[in-house]
Image (cartoon, rainbow, N blue to C red):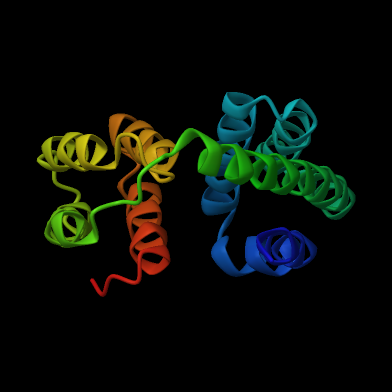
Length: 175
């Protein structure tokens, strides 16, 4: 199911990219962020394709951007399909390893508070992220907490807020 959602998202990449990137600066920032995230997780083809898009935007190579986005979308679809396969294998291993489910009652107030701090671009978010990371240690959400921590460390409050909102949705927590 997650693999299908990821692949559907990859197929709609042009629309998402165009919808999020109302201007060149935003488009360049999105490509740059994707490049960094891809490099962090070892998705070299995605990182290279995102770099090419970023450079094309920066160098005003408008005629090349469409084909570069196609390449990026294809590479992203492959990476997402691989990640979905690994996630499925990991989920099976998690059950065997006995990872505990997150304690939603303890996490909910922290997520809500953190969402508010991120909405205000507050540096106080760092403390709440550490608290959340502690609460999520040993759960299937631990890796997401690490991603969130990286976003806040880079002062990418918008990206961090997306992480929080996605986590809240998956935990069925209303922010």
